[in-house]
Length: 451
Ligand SMILES: Nc1ncnc2c1ncn2[C@@H]1O[C@H](COP(=O)(O)OP(=O)(O)OP(=O)(O)O)[C@@H](O)[C@H]1O
Ligand SMILES: [Mg+2]
Image 1 (tube, rainbow, N blue to C red):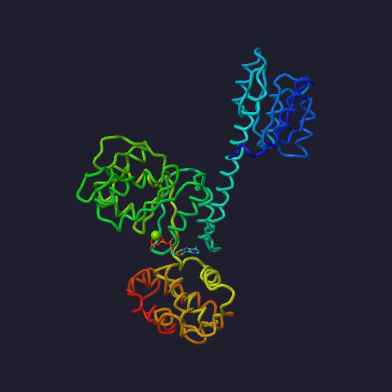
Image 2: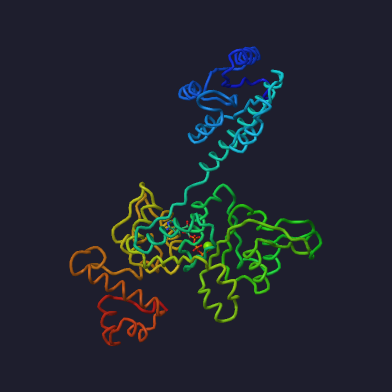
């Protein structure tokens, strides 16, 4: 295949007789050859042109072959370099190989051998290039993780993602359902050096214990009923990449020590096997439970908790992200949609127990119901509409009304947090119960919605 491809070649050699002979030979073989009598000239060629393969004589006056190689490497030039040495300088050649030269030839040698080595070097150059192109294609095909959020708590999260991403440390991602834990895991993986290797996810809540084990660690044929073949575990699939263990709070107690071992030294055994395997996997874990509480209750091993919680990242609930609902609406609706101000106000003031996922669902539903790409209050789910501030409150957001809105939203937050318990909510707000009743009436809040 490559035999028919002509090589872009540079020959750098101070011995005129030998250089001319080599150039002549390679040109007759159909290759595109440039020549230089010393390192200085060679560098000038590189200013104008790219070479797949270069032949450097080891001993030249002025810039030596080794120096030339060093300069090209530091400029990021990817030529494959073959050194020519005399018997006395073989050690230098070995040195050159360590510095990244492809090959070396000890004089004297037949010119056919020189061509053969050049072809091998070209082959390597082409493979390398193909590899890079494939990686670039994969990178382009992989959509960037778009994490929307300009509120303070989200800015903190995004900064943390950038910081922990490249560290290769285990990260525990916590947050209510639908806050974007999986999205954050993807962003961390993308910010890491493992980005060209897979990110694999297992959801512990979705599988029975035995399956979780064989999914994670793999199994040997016949190790349990139904294990008809040998299977790689997800740890092996994720080797070199990242494994997201979702709902880690649901990881069965029997598997916790096994996970701890992988975290400690990267070793694991397939179900039904005694053979140790080693993997290089970064662990991310996600949970919507309070894992420290699970530890206190004795359901989650403390040592494992500390191993996973090297870095911890807590996603704020959507209702605590000031201004982000607006941004998410614009992002998910796109430019072709319009939304009535009172519909938008209803979305903004809702407490979103299901967080971003619930908001996306509400928007999707609205786009199905709406006429003419125009979303009104009628297109929103009733729980959103019912909780919305009534006339007067929603549209006029100036002056005193704006303060009222903030107060109202805060009361709703607290009611939500206290699950509609008015006495408790009043305590949390630090006001008398009777005052809370007055405010509920004034702001037309129906606390039963939050039970
Ligand atoms: N900041 C954000 N910007 C844009 N989209 C987001 C953001 N956060 C979450 N989403 C989207 O919301 C949906 C839910 O996010 P994700 O699945 O990551 O949540 P989760 O915390 O893992 O939820 P669960 O606890 O239910 O597993 C996804 O479609 C995700 O793309
Ligand atoms: Mg999730």
